[in-house]
Length: 291
Image 1 (cartoon, helix red, strand yellow):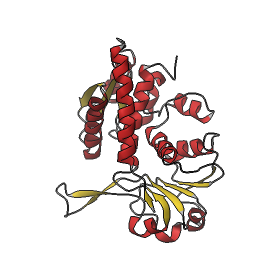
Image 2 (cartoon, rainbow, N blue to C red):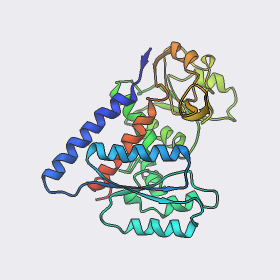
Image 3 (cartoon, rainbow, N blue to C red):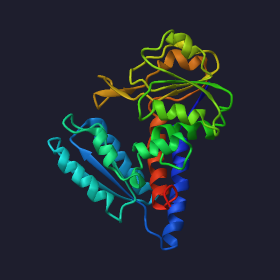
């Protein structure tokens, strides 16, 4: 069993991005600028945005954080989105999810200019990705594809089961794996799938994005499978200073011994999601996707 080290690959990608940014600065080009909009004080969101700011500093990006309390109105937030759309100094921005219940996440996503949608959530970017046009690809699916590529894991002709169908991970992941660059035969499974254990056992590559801690057990994975665990659920723990620990969607102790490759949680997909956002911001700065 080989542990897929997302931290190591993300560090390599950061070095590549930083080198490119250094050349841009030497040539007198504009420094890439990423803005994060954070609403409320969700613990996971606070941590994630803090990491994003550190990541920007590490590669030489300019970064800005805009904060709102969780009682901000939908109208106020949408007004800020429109303001950011028209700000020529910034190249990309994200509105950190989840948002408070009184704000429509879909409305906010659709209000973002697709040219600055470095999260890759806007329907225009999703649509372009589906038909194979240049687009900003959602950070987690992009990061997973990059992990498979950099570990030289064969995807062509392989049976790939994507467990989960969210718009952020499951659906785009299934499209990317079926495209010519990867050439996998893809099955999308979920909580209503019949004979779910059997479907999962058919996978040469199993990508798990259910959001249910330790959902996938040893009996759901065949010998030699590649398992990518996207899950990051905070579970209370009296063994850590923070009072919680992260658990994946895969019961690692049972599954790992059967795998050829597996991602750990933490340290697998998470760092790749963060570095993929940087990569999208670099593309936005260089006008690579939208000329």
